[in-house]
Each structure stands twice: as C-alpha cells, then as structure tokens.
Length: 349
Image (cartoon, rainbow, N blue to C red; front, side, top):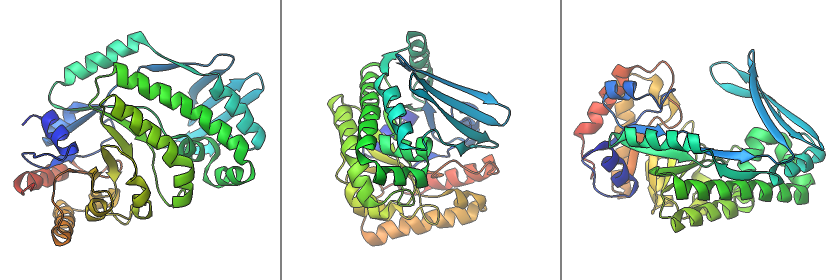
C-alpha cells in the first residue's frame, strides 16, 4: 500500500495495512526528516488563491521581532502586530472598537478572489512531485468568527464586541464568509489536493457550545456542502477542548477532525471521538506533552487509548496517530521512529 493509499483509506475508514503515523514537525513541507523516521508524509501545498482588495490594500512585513499587518481602507487603516520568537503571538489586535468592525467590513466587502496562475503552476508541480509518497493538503482559511476572535479582535475583546454590536458583527462575518466560499470553490475546482482544510482551532476554552452553534455551524455547513458538491474531502483542524462540542460537530458532513487532542491539552480521546462523531475519521490521539516523554511512556499512552477503544466496543478504522498539535522541537527522530515501529507491529482492526 502506498503512502497516499494508506492516508486515503484511513480517512475514508477503509482497511489499511498499518496505522498512519504523522508527527507534525516545524518545516512539515520538508520530506527529508519524514523519510529518515520512515513515517507517513502530509504535504501542505503552496497557496495559489489571491485577493484583489479593490479600493483597499493589505500589507504584511517583518520589522525586527515583530510582524506587522495593515488593512488600509478609505475609512482608515487597521494595524495588527504579532511578536515573533519561536512562534508568533499577538501584541496588538486590528479590531478594538465597533468603528474598527465597520472599517474591516468595508475591507472584506471590497475583496475579489482569483487564482495566481504562476503560483497555481507551482501548486500543481508540488502535487505531482509528491506522487504516492503521501497526502497533499490545501487550506481554504478559517471560519469567520474563529478568525475574528483569534486573529482580528482577540478573545476577550471579541466576545464583548459580539455582545455589544451584534448587527455590525453579523455584517462583517457575512463579508468574511463570502470570501471563504469563493476561495473554497476555487480550490475545489482547480487544485488536485487530496484533502482541504479549514483551520478552526475549535475549543470551549475559546467559545461556548452555544456560540459555536450560532456563529460557526451555519458557515461550516456551507463549506461542507461546497466540498461535498465537488466530491472533495474536507478536514477541520480542531485542536482544543471538543467534548462538549461533539453533538454540534456531528451535525456537519465532513471527512475528519485533525489535531484531535487528548488530555490534558485537549479533553477528548479517540474513544470519545468515536462515540460522539461516529461518521468521522480522526488525526491525533495524543498531545504535545505526550511527546516530551521517553518513547516507552508514549507507547504506553497509546496502548491505554487503544484499550479504551476496545472496552467501548469501537474499531480502529479511521484513526491516524499524530502529535496532536505541533510536536515539541526537542522530540528526536529516534523517539518518533521507535513509536512508529511500534505502530507498524500492532493490529489496525
């Protein structure tokens, strides 16, 4: 079975020759380290969709240890700043008032979506070069409210603005959604990727189940319908506390949850996922703290997860083991290889 066949069969909950194992490494587009470990490969394809901002403009640049984004409109310019160390973190959010929501709405309403033909050729070439070694993924963005909370307004301020100015927020979210819909449709039509992501980071540490149902589910359903209409596999990256969201997520018709994260970083095991989302596949099953341990302790944690599945009467189909979120930088190839070798030896059924 090729790497691509194994991935696709896993995601479609069909028989595989062994478990899929995908450590999420920084520089995950670089195949060499995955080849050294011997495990499965998951290639993020270059993004080829471009935005024309009409009467507005968008710029981003690095200045020292800061990454600065500017959303310029005739009504004013919004500035967001991220600090950069090992990873980025927000220092200043672009949206801080209802006036900023109106400005950003104008910005999104001016966007038109098209393909950058040169980048599209690069995307196609990357897909063809991958061959059957692994699976290729495209990303269509994030649903509007999650992007608003995490990247535009901040969690605390974003919730307050949502409560105080619901009509203004609704107009912004719909403008953002329109861009997402057109982006997803273009990817479905022109990109051969095996899976298409939305990067949600869903978690009850960020929003309540009620807010998720109100602000996220209707838009996410649209993305599911578009992907299904094109015969494409849609994967939602949901890396947080999901247990109380599972009944709502179950209403959505998509292929898999990626970064399905175990406690204590997440709060749901594979068994909980199988119980709550019986028609879905799962990529994850561990968490970043798992991978700070010696290989033998990691294997014991995986064995406990598999035993929970057995006790619950659940099969092992549709499960791909990964590091949950990004793996800790200090985890060695030797540790990954030892865990991978263990996963190669145990039954998939």
